[in-house]
Length: 503
Image (cartoon, rainbow, N blue to C red; front, side, top):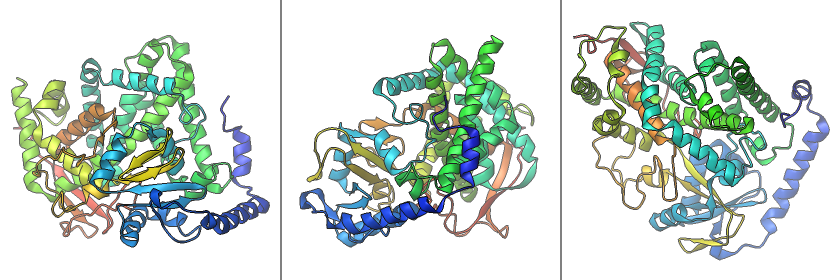
């Protein structure tokens, strides 16, 4: 049974929020705002930000980058704390703090993300409150999806999705990258972690993306801090989660009843004997994690290339060299660029594309507004001399290093020629220490293939809303914790068909 409740109940509650529940929530917040600041503080845990609720809560959810940065400026400390209701949250910066944070054995990502972010579809025992055995099983299946044999099978399917999208865009036009490119990246994630029944149906993929967008929009301060409270945002989020859950479970049912095996991730999970909750959790969780991160990175990567013709040319030349080295004719028509790229083996994409890799690396540094979130599930740990008791939370904003001019001069400048920095966790794009992105092999392949298709198919330029070349270039909004869209206006890609893939 689906733990959120009956569809009819959701529909009814969604439009009938009682006045007593609003009054109850207001009274609770007022009580906490008065009582919590009276609790005694312990200096060895870090300086506590001043102020009463909700003044420390609203900025954390609405303008997180500014709020965390202000905390460092106000306290003049490398580490400080603030309260989210009854939760004490430590904010970490600096070299030693970063090392201690990412190396601590007892700091748990899943619990930290669940409580401090809440940006996942909530299904008890499916996407949250997973036991260690279930988490290990998910990691094992994710590793199987990224085996060389499976990635080799996925390459033509990924490229086929790219081709269909680009044919639909036409030979020339104007594209909003944070819509068009993001939508394509979402399609690629659906292709890689779900099944052909969903991935081959554009209408279903579109509905799925809208539901996930609704989950994102439903992630508010109220839904994170009071998940039991039937606010409009929570009910919309619950409704969208129910739709996603139903789509996946119905697809599993149809596949089982058909008795026809398919070559996709769903079939791999079924063949492995995984139960339905495991399969649903795998698909729902990885889809939102992969689609959001890969979609943001792909959108910004193409946008940056539209501002830097020299790197666009370097990327195109590298892809042409990969084609030549694969032994396939470099002459391609409009309809078979994808076929030609499909002949390039996985190992070549991973070891012979340093330009593409540097583009991905620099894009991750500038445009991924991540904040690492952890909860201490073990004994008290020490981070740069400050104590983090069991049950407490800690944050590390990636901006502390990725936008730090001591490590990266002119940090908002897109410069893939920067030398790689690997010492002291000075690049965190794929995680660091004890926790790294376990899906990075698949994500990198998707980004390489999408970029290769785009630079071969089109000559393009990033323009502003007047159609003029973007000057200044788009600047990622690190307060936009989900999408990191430009903070300085709206931008587009002016594109036209290129001869690069023909001659």
